[in-house]
Amino acid sequence: MTDTALSERSADVIVVGAGPSGSTTAYYLAKAGLDVLLLEKTAFPREKVCGDGLTPRATKQLVSMGIDISEEAGWLRNKGLRIISGGMRLEMDWPDLASYPDYGLVRRREDFDELLAQQAVKAGARLYERCNVSGPILDERTGRITGVTAKLGEEKTPAAFHAPLVVAADGNSTRLSLAMGLHRREDRPMGVAVRTYFTSPRHEDDYLESWLELWDRRGPQARQLPGYGWVFGLGDGTSNVGLGILDSSAAFRELDWREVLKAWTASMPEEWGFTPENMTQPIRGAALPMAFNRQPHYTRGLLLVGDAGGLVNPFNGEGIAYAMESGQIAADVITQAHARATAAQREMALGRYPRILKDTYGGYYTLGRAFVKLIGNPKVLQLCTERGLSHPMLMRFCLKLLANLTDPTGGDAMDRIINGLTKITPRA
Image 1: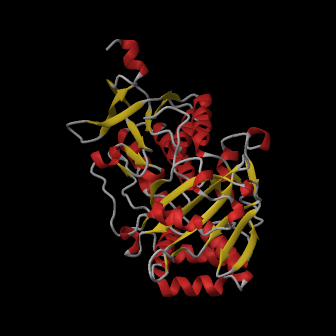
Image 2: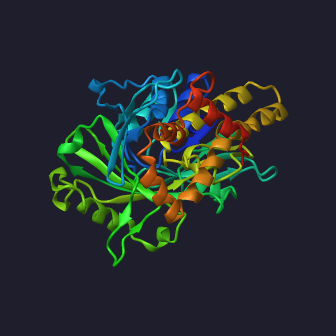
Image 3: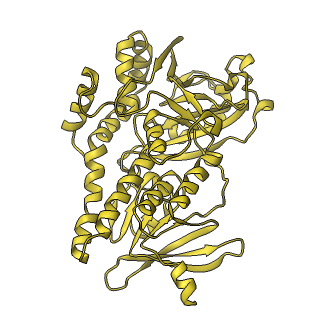
């Protein structure tokens, strides 16, 4: 390899995966002046399984990155959440907070990820598309990661990239983490999302719509499933319609969720147009790794962000906000470590990353795991869905809790209760 090629493939940090977590990490690292390689296995634009709906928590991250979120730039705003359950319907606006905007957004993942990657490139990151990382390069003496091997382009040309730090942002499957011996924790919840798109008159909607009762009516006896359905209008003539399901019941492994989605949409009002002939894409599914299901988040030169570290919110299945937040946290830790004079000092600074994640999310995710176990019981789930919507004050509290939207200081009584609960709950 020539000196030029070697320098092109060496950097201060390698980020593997240009999804929301990877691109956010690369953006903040580049903005801080570090040399960053952002390696993406596919080429943009590319599809990802997602509800395409963003809460105010994710919206805040986009604003922080300087993304143009105007309607003219193709974003659709929403006011809050519409909940449907037990024949009742409740519309709740997003809470009015100092820490977060009072609106969410909708955008197709088809170009959402590309916008974030391009923002990282504008900040100075070097993006390699069609760069399929095949494994880590390890220092034989220390076992630390010092780079990655990859296959480039359609020809799958072997290549090596080198950096003293590597960020695994390669999603739930995270081959890089597995190659470093970091396996999924079986005691943490896992979810599945399945979704498709329909041409529909419901495409312009001011609210994200969540159906808390998810029934499988295909057998002799209807049964309620541990999950929820959604209908998110995209403002472009189509709606994203899908299901989020938890692994807390036997039904999780028994059922073909694509068939459940077909049956559920077939039960919708005819005028909504959720029919096979109006489906614009095939039904696709993806795993939702929740509540720190892969740890430690830092080891031997490797940091895990987003889905690779199991950062999906167990309360509501939201992943993008936490992917971006963990990317920002990781970038800040790396930037501080990079400025330290000795290897021991750098390692001490990097060791803060898992602790910051646990301080930030640990108590909340522990509460979420308890919530997942509760609603895995069909009787508890039915009681919650039947009784909850008749108490608007309780539902507003639930919205703040489930969407993790509180002001950390000040705030109202609900904020103080939720913040207090997360502080006293163990941070596992």
